[in-house]
Amino acid sequence: MVIRPHDLIEISDLSLLKWNEENDWAGPSLERTPFVVVRRAERPNQDCIPVGIRGYHRNQREPAFLHQNGIKNILSPYWLKEQRMWKRLNDERKQLPVIAVMDLVMEIMSEWHWGPTGSAGFEMTTGYPALKVTSDLDLVIDAPEEFDFNKAKKMLQTLDTLSIRIDIQVETGNGAFLLREFIEQRTKTVVLRTNSGPQLVRNPWTVRVK
Image (cartoon, rainbow, N blue to C red; front, side):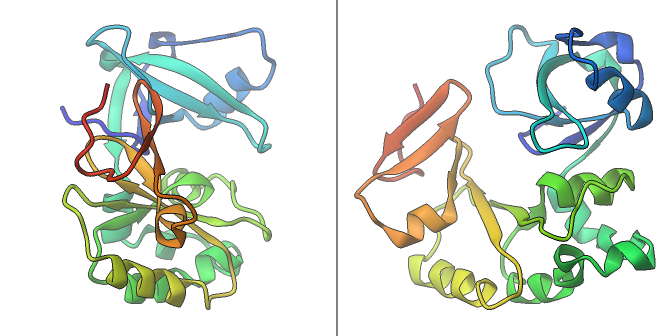
């Protein structure tokens, strides 16, 4: 079973999810929408998956661990894109800026292996209205091999002409980095987010993760 950061997991049994139950929003949120997102962290053991619980508000994020027996379904961002899940939303939600540009994004990124994450991916998966008019679009690119810098720069510049802000993480297999930070090259290093924490690296594809 391959499970990667950003995957959305539908839970079959909430009793197999462990989190800090002192907050007053996570339980009702899970009862309403029994989905969690896989987060980047070390596993305490092979059976437990690090996940995050989403609430309605931006500051409502709760780390948790899900036993693998509690998995009902796994949906990756790349599957969401292939299925064009934004087209299944109702007409009112399709008017939101993030959803309205999805077909253009798909055209611009036609040569990349990518998918929606964050609020957009969550709403496409669950139907729960997570997006707002002011929401950014979060995406992930799967790039296990180093890509052409100029090609990526041109793609990002084209995306920047759209009416919304787009934030892209690049997954290398060693971890993930922000595409914009990589392209802007303000320093000689980039932050690679790994299961054991962030690392400053020169080349995110060749680094040996600690």
